[in-house]
Image (cartoon, rainbow, N blue to C red; front, side):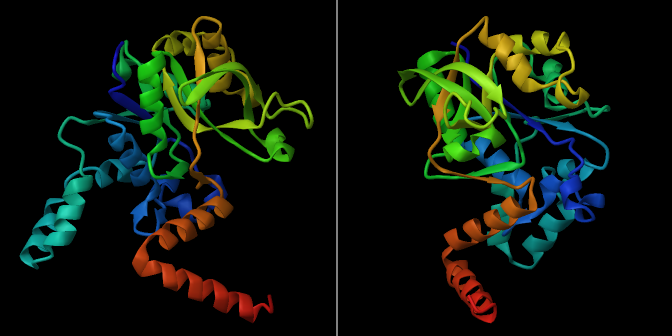
Length: 293
């Protein structure tokens, strides 16, 4: 069984839901408490044992490359001022030389096309795919649990978690088959099923481990909804050739691609830090009292 060593991060999106903030700052670099969203996702991949981080970028995204690069002037200044704790914190987040690669998605043709753009960097081996809008909060990272399940199955793994059945029409939903370790076989995938028709309440939350055969499927994939190359359509075809397993993730997921999810993530991660917990509680209670609630 081939190990999962590489991860793809599609970061070419425009972030229009956050305009005007994202006019000059990529949405992936918006900050949740003390670090940009993309850092949380990369940290999750690193915890899962990923060795090579592949970013599919677009225009105005070079600041992401700068973030994961060494900043000699900053490091020197911190050292000269004796701020060694901050310096070590930055160094701990720094990928090692040769661990990051970047490629461009020149045309916005959807998630499937973005994944296909990474084909030469991934090569003929399984890889993880992490959507950078989604950040997780759990004792064991989502991708680490997926890698463990992959070690038992050796097949494609799609992270899923439960939603309110009444909300299933808002998500990509999978059908649940036979259980397998910490997951189950996926019997079908339906993108935003009509109310009352969903095969389950397990929705796809933005984490995948895929076999390299997906690239050939994406290369010949016809455009789907919105005139884009849809990853879901390609995974359905992959499922006709190989098994797909759902990893049942039971932590929290925050969609930082929406203002509501972004605010929720900031509150949740601030609340997790002891020095900010009381601040969060005090602010919420004060605002609630002012609103008469």
